[in-house]
Length: 419
Image 1 (cartoon, rainbow, N blue to C red):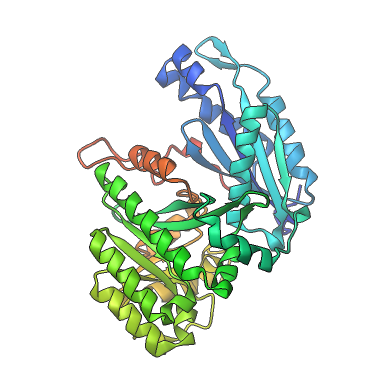
Image 2 (image 1 turned 30 degrees about the vertical axis):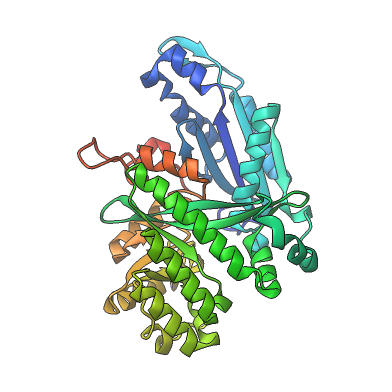
């Protein structure tokens, strides 16, 4: 394994799930069954002390770590499987936990959090079914995507049921509850598998399909917002608006009309660089959205050539700090200065601030001290389908008057290990 003083060559994301947890809970009772997950964490930590661990469900965890070669993830998962071959003792009862294990890895310089998460999500489903370890090497998968083929296939992708929406929660730091979520479109191609937005969104822009795809997304999000409200979750759902669409007056009219007619609490996320393409039209369309009551968030702030001249003109209520500054927050000298100054700037402009890419409790604590309003990232939750979002909201953020929240802010210390 790579030492602490040397940057890892590979980045791995893995998942472990106790597949017979329901059976063990019936056998042991709820209280005793809950002790199995800390045992899983302890045995994992004994083998991978530098791993960052995140609980994703009552009987499942994800963990990340670095290595020198892809084989390191295979070795780690085999060792964990071997460690859990031995029974776990709970108050004198010997029980065997059946684990589903899966992982994905990519060279550190090329690792993409979303791609890793999606690969692991698919891999753990296969591992659960086939009762074997599944690992995926993203470096050997095709890196180039045929843009022309994607442009051709995009036209019917939504109608064919290939497009889905995942949601990533944003937690308000002071309120310690989810106040909004970001909607992220996913394309599961029938032959290519999962295609990243970074590949198909440019194809949609180039082919002229981006307006239709975004309006389809709005329809799905509005319907999901209604279902969330029926379950008692009155959240703002943010939809990403592609740069070229900010200069499309017809799209702006159609999108604003959809949101206004629905009565749903929908927000739009835009990038500052998109405004620079056609400032006059973009700002006019953004003002139309704001006048309709649609909150505007500026996404990936700091990743491009941020301009105060445009920033002060935008009718935005939220500014999102790019994850490139957040992931190194506790290990860099400059990033904390940039983040703190950005938070102060946004507050001076009467905007709330969201930090993206929050992966550790240390980063969360520092952002809280800095006055950051909201956080988003894998420490809280990865992007998940609608049903998983509802489960997350029900378990992690109970209605006022219930017992104290059991969310990411107050999990037992034994449940978290970080490098």
